[in-house]
Amino acid sequence: MLSKIQHSPLTYSALIHDVLVSRSEILAEPIYIQLTWEDPETGELKKPVLRPPIAVGRENDHLPEQLAGQSVSHLVLLDKEISRYHALITVANTQLYITDRSANGTFINGRKIRSGIHPFSSKDTLRIGPYKITATLKRENDLNATVQNFDQTNLLGEKNVSNSLPKNKPVVWLIGLVILLIMGVGTWAVVSGLLEGLKPIPNEENDSSRHHLERVV
Image 1: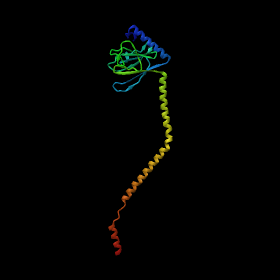
Image 2: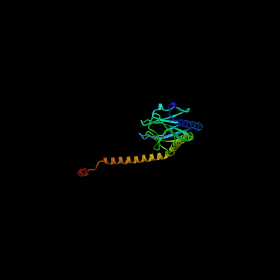
Image 3: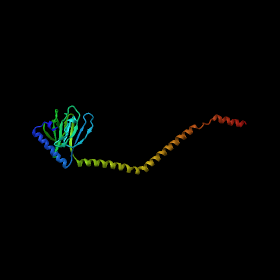
Image 4: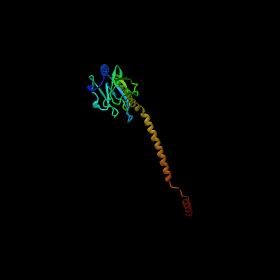
């Protein structure tokens, strides 16, 4: 793959130097790059975390597997504006760099970069095709702390839920009894009303006739 890369001698040597420096940093303490962007079609937020160097392109088969003896991470972005092998992101002395290899160009904060290596920071926005990407350096300790905090938060949440249930049981029972009592009173009132409505209405004429017959007899 390296034989197909066309760079000036100065650019190529500088690229190899940056990769070697990045490799020494990773050996000392693993370092990662978190790339963040919104999908231009769905609007879904993407936040992959990859180890540098990172090759960006449209086709995975055209991205290099190794560079200066170091494994290369792949970021595949599917769009016709993106070249098969579009750009390379590296790190040297905690500084982010990007090398453009595309036909349509790579942009930093809206400016098209020229051939060669260009520094950028987490405050800058990379545009590769329709994708607007920001990059942030992450060390392994930061990633472990993030995962640990997430696990502890979930654990505390589960403990709070489990501990609160026994304390609330008497209240739940009391509310249930009150509801049952109200329902019982309401049912009794309805039934009483129905029974009252079913009672026969006294007939005054029948009563007077009955009293008249009793007098005659």
